Length: 480
Ligand code: AR6
Image (cartoon, rainbow, N blue to C red; front, side, top):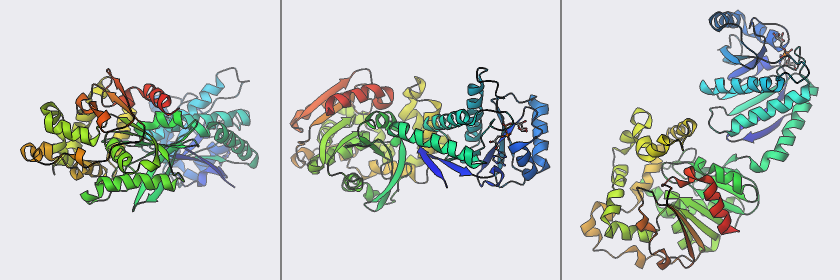
């Protein structure tokens, strides 16, 4: 019998049995401060792992002294299937008013942190403190499950699997009840993950909640994660979905540049909505996702209830600006680098230092992005082929007005060819965007029948990261 829930991109699994046989990368030991082994699960782990674990523990104790309750250290796994053992010391139960709960939570949190910092992907916990140390099993299960969920839902960790290995059926049932409760209470606000095979690609998407569909599209060099606050908010009464666009992070990355033409990108979105079982939906999008969304609204209005665009230029307005506005041409000149063969190397050398700087330099400096956010980006960019996938959006685009201005302006403008947008549209624009100047929001009423524009003077291109609550509020106000 097993029970399972998903938190972020990780799974929590219940297993009944002996933890020493678990095939995970790390198992956690309910140790004592001396780290020299003992009874219960501690004894079992040392017996199965062999003397080498004790030797390592001895070295640790001689270096840092006795391990306080609530803390964790790591050793190799010796003869165990697990490569590592994380030793943590649970609190001794003394009635519950001696900070036992906080200490027990510390055991789980510190063990997860330690595992995450070693890029461990799978970890198994016993029911710490519930044996010799006498912690009431119901209360300990609640703390164990809550702490692990909280840790995993904060997002940035290498951990993909957390097992609770319960020795006996009684403990298993307690944990099962606890997981069920979490599922019922927390499901609506929990971000989950899935894949859809559509349009010849496999799209990874994060989602939250149930109800009418609202879909969020990211741009360059983002991934689904930029919308996590929106997923949580709109997951309360919608099915909120944020895919990794093709080419990015965990989605397929077709190699041919032509596969990044708008017609394919649009079709990904239409078929993803269809796959999810919806005929009509609300579409919100930023940057390159916005370019896709604009085009989608032109050609597939029958599928859209409403359109929300955040700092992404309407293609006609953008072409107009590139043709007529030298400032915008200058602001867009980075696109030429992105289209070049050197782009991948230039952007990714030294652990993406240049890409981090040109894209996120400001919002790293002012603390909008945390260290964990940055790690998340690097992880997404480091997926094989992901940087090229993102750059291919630039390579597949027509930027003649930028590359060969004199020739481009002799040709007919896009406005003659593209349909007018009839879907009710909200445009949110951070006016401090240095790549897409405010000229891009001028004259939109010429191309959109029903358009509301909300300019935000003190926000940049990364307004969704900077002001997630404002974004939620503006979208709520528009779609109600
Ligand atoms: N696999 C999984 N769980 C197990 C196993 C096993 N092989 N063996 C026992 N359990 P305890 P504590 C369960 O007493 O309360 C040691 O002597 C067990 O059923 O091992 O944190 C240390 O050296 C119970 O639910 O750990 C410390 O001195 C849970 O593991 C002290 O005990 C924890 O029981 C720590 O006490």
